[in-house]
Image 1: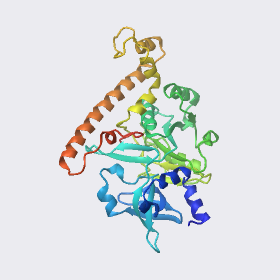
Image 2: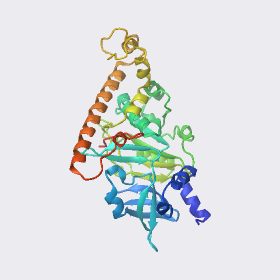
Image 3: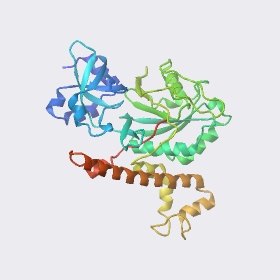
Image 4: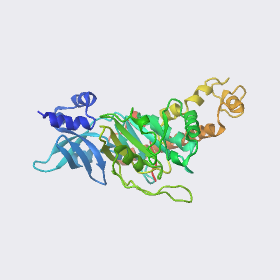
Length: 369
């Protein structure tokens, strides 16, 4: 039986009744192991938070043998079931509890494979700087990924000290992100921290994502009120950031919130994000339902409510262009994944992947720098 201190250690990192229920559904062998949370991920090893403190960990040989794809391996934010090595601060990972939410990217290279960016996030802070890098279309793409992940997106406009009228930029974001909270902040001026208090609660996990140079690591240090991550300046000519964060890591703040810092993303590649796409562009989807013809392509069709909205200024043509562009990308990448899955099943003796697992829910695929 765990002591009160051991239980409190796990609860500090987000263990609650939800995870107790998830564990109760596992087999008896898994139940005999100890739950721990992955707080950092490296090439072939992990740092995990156990009931007795931080351990280094690797997966068992059986786990590695049974893993079909990269996304089957533990990721930062996962709750894993582990066996502690006696007398050591090392453990071995036997299983991953089913993820509540998951943000996923397409693995780098030409191989069609998933890679988890962060697991079991409650909120996702989409960070964009109020400098030359401010880009509504980029924010829209992050929103597609965020909604698909299952986490609640929140847009943070950083470096408000560089902008004379940050409120006007916040309104622009609100127009393309219906229902999504938008906040502008400045770590330099210590501005806007109080607006984030509703998210920074004990046991709540927050992922931070955005391009290099938008101030993600600065944001983490500011929220923590101490230096947790190294920060670097941006290039003066184009306001592009330099890589600072090189791996994903989960930090426990003094107020009890858990914040996950991630490497910067300059180019996003969405995958299997149809639900997130519909949610991010819900206003256009609503307009499309008002078109005269159900198969309206929103080009030159008579009675097209979408074209009418653009003519009257209700809908920004650039937003509609991004809507169509991301739809084409998702369709193309879905065909590519299906073709790749077919080739893989022909080359292996493993059972064929079910159709439902080819279209996992609550996931989005991103391409990092």
